[in-house]
Image 1: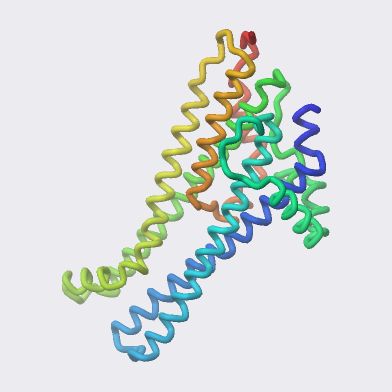
Image 2: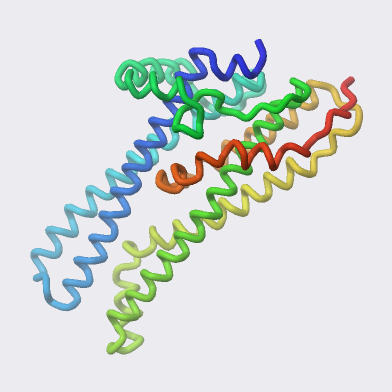
Length: 298
């Protein structure tokens, strides 16, 4: 079966829907986690200025902290389900199931996909009937009219360049938010001594640190995606290459992409929806000149 048909068969569409639902849940829990962390910072400032008494602070802090830990756990759980589902879908589509070296329970993912499909039947019907620019999962990859054996590489390139593009946008937004948070602390403590600000930051470092780490994690993801992009771009396929050797190279790229996705960074749903309509035109323009069909297969 051709890749264009395989990516639209029933199991593929069910897996893509499970992936989308899982990532969506992970983002919802992640957003709740961020809100709870911001509330912890807020009550910490209120306590510092004696607006909130000691008892009220510790009760509020305890409840918010416990809920934030739960939200963080659930976000990681559903993100991992999405990552594994995406990896299974790609490997099935690319013919790389025999090369898998990660611990993924395919039967569990298939079962989850069936359950989610039944639970959200109306949403499933909409998504499998529409392409990505309209919020659906049909025709997931933009498959050019090229050598069928090279199509998995185009898909890898599409995966990576799109994620790299969104990550750069998110990095700008997170950097702005980080700057605003830093500016807010400076404004709040403007009339205080530097030591007072340092003491506050040190005292509540476990609260401020997660957001700060998110910025650095995003920067790391951008670098990783750029490295993978350069690796794909610089592949020399203009020589004799066997299909088995090509699949080994493709599997190496798949493993690297899997590890990047496991970093638990989630692209903002708002950003994704803003740019999804331009995805296919953006991808098509980028990959149109990649990997000409002069590959010599042996």
